[in-house]
Amino acid sequence: SDHSVPDDSFLMIQLLMIQFLMIQFLMIQLLMIQLLVIQFLMIQFLVIQFLMIQFLMIQFLRIHS
Image (cartoon, rainbow, N blue to C red):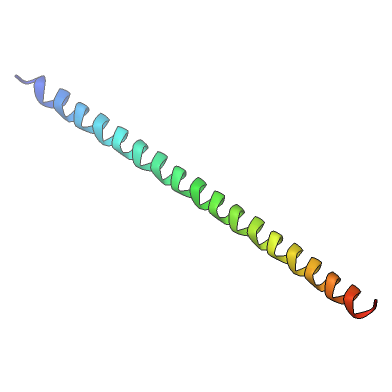
């Protein structure tokens, strides 16, 4: 029975480590998702800018035709 207590504590420490690693993994995943969202927003912004430039070009051509 003397040896069971340190074994239990070792198991607990292992479980805590595993939990910690899982939490870290989840946080990294969250960061990656955030990065993807930011990239998506940047692409949307570029598309909107491109459309606005096209629109201005068309207006410019209309006025000067």
